Image 1 (cartoon, rainbow, N blue to C red):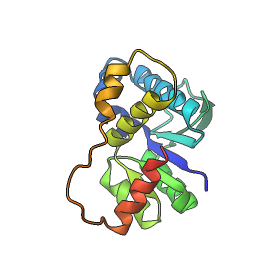
Image 2 (image 1 turned 120 degrees about the vertical axis):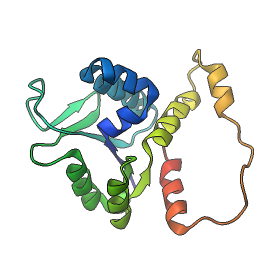
Image 3 (image 1 turned 60 degrees about the vertical axis):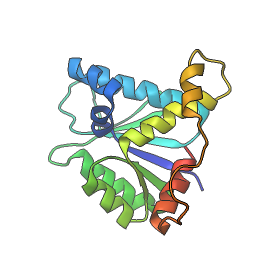
Image 4 (image 1 turned 30 degrees about the vertical axis):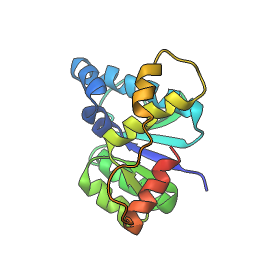
Length: 173
């Protein structure tokens, strides 16, 4: 079963310290930085990725759906919001989808439709950590060593079925 990652674009940008600083300077720089991050992740994993942004009022984008750097990019049309588009995608893909958002309305809707969910900051940490294990000897070795702590933390009780399902999907990242 292939995984389709559906990302709430501006939610992820504004939840990330590094991406939000670029977004505050120029909204297009924030989007480009997110797409660069996702494109580098896509080189290591072959998951289908769709990023949904609010509005198409920006004249740079001629259509509501584009393919940029191997990432499907969608822009909602007025009066719909990105949340509406994400909910439609989650309804269509159901258990094949992993929805990335920190918006609780979107998260609850996606979970009700059978999709796995993950918060934007946690997803960013996972895709940055995936770059540590891609086999390339990069200059990030110290940063990767700090992240690769595999000691067990927390109590040993069994999580709920929904939480195990979300972790299973997130483990495929």
